Image (cartoon, rainbow, N blue to C red; front, side, top):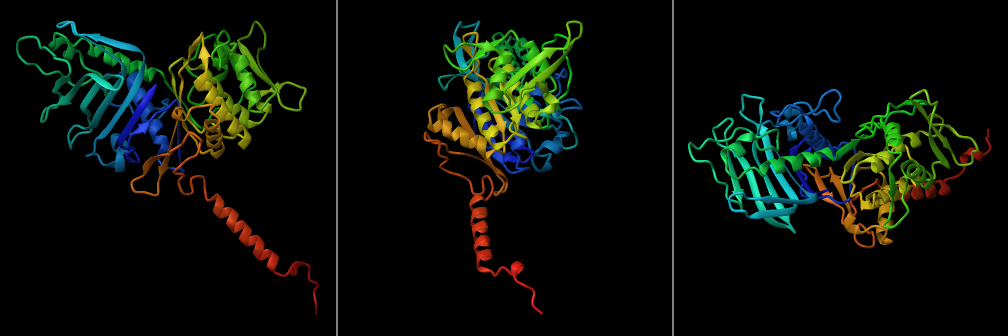
Length: 468
């Protein structure tokens, strides 16, 4: 689970400042305020980690990628190629990471890793990206146990020096060779291990980084339309897909899984849980995924809406149901420890359903499987006041702790745009509610009252008789 994030000189952000990442992290703001860029940046890093090209510092994306950011000049703040993109984040490890110095037998262990890096153009007349520096820190109870990083030597195109803190690196005797460039934006190259007698542990740091980004998934705001028939060959999809295209396949692949939403609560089958969530959102009365026949690998999704006695196909119900179904499935289908990035999960939902969706998200972060907490983290970009209001209410009711919710507002009233934390207290109150946060509601009410008063004081000329 991510605990902290900061991004500098990326797209519209000169500096996001320190972002506290909670189990439910929300980003609000006007259109084109830059809130989507935060998720895009994380997805670009994920694409880079999963790219087969070990020399590519960043993989901005291609035709089938979640994000397509173009050239470095297109992604750097104010398109200034002379600026470097810097970033840092800290995450909680699923298991304690223990490292041992083979020379001294001293052990180092930590429950969190922090990472920071700075990337930019290597030379003014080139387009090649280079990592100027990177650094890992192993932390236990907020205390630094060890740190190690690489820094590009000035004037050298691909030579780096390696430095460590709280750990003494010992080189093999002989000529002091310098390692080459890092692998992608985060990885220590093989030379670091080859040139030192006790640097094998850096491979564990590389691996932990890759594990982190393997657990990140993304669901965009534009989801595929419902179909009458769905094919499934038995393959288990990694996620529901960027547009929810694998939603039904995920439901079928998860039929043997059982989940619950509280300690010692009876676990229910996956499909039953999905049906329960849709019903609690007041969207349907019944939900089933049926095989067309035993001989065909095709399935249909049947639902019964409120007030109806008949099951109908998914395309025959409200559009909002087909749009929220991928959201629910991804939240519950993702493996334990997942970080789910979502844009506008409430899209096409009635306000009451938007409020109910917040309750679903609370249940997701509390969900359990096989007797263990799933520890799923939700990073949500939303425009929904109803969603936020329900979270505030649940904080006041002690359904969820205030520390489990982190909310930020992209303030375009300042230049450059700032990302401001919303200070939510234990009573669910936002102590620094931004001006016109969800529009000028009070202004609209005042102007409506003023216009109504003017109408009452004017003569009703429409009903006056015409006189010669």
